[in-house]
Image 1 (cartoon, rainbow, N blue to C red):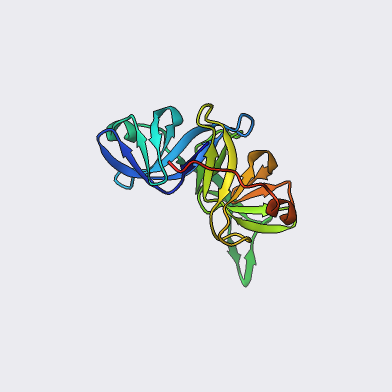
Image 2 (cartoon, rainbow, N blue to C red):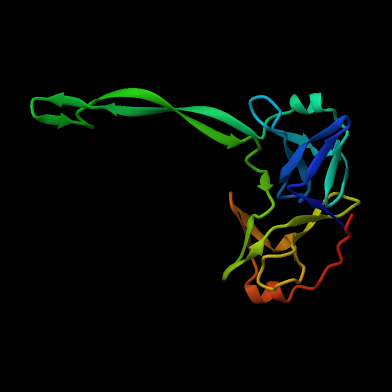
Length: 204
């Protein structure tokens, strides 16, 4: 097995182009579909969604892409901005009185809402994401462990900042119950996580 790091340097075929911020995965196949790459020199949105097919190699320090920096700039943004129409009550003032909804006339304003540009079925995970067992927090995600042949995610890797000190903790992806915006929820309790067998991980 090998591992994919988040928050590491990324290089295009013609030079350094930023860092990885998120990994997008299919929750059914457990395969990585995209890597979110942040390049602050890009216009408008600094983070782009790069198909995993563009990744030619990855180590703990660096991800190498087959595309150029110009090609990266034309890829889909990871964050898209939408304008949401919101009715706002217009305050009306009478002699000595203040009138509001439902006695007011509606005006309209727009709120700017930023969303991640991924399908509703996909999951976005990032370094430092909280991992919670059925009975409380156990640590934070450091890396994803992949099968080098299939590209399928096999384990979550916690290297430090977890309940068991300096021990590397590898959690099988089958132990994931669900993932929300900030937390990876496990089907296991703390005792079961502690008793998970150590899995050798290839450090690229």
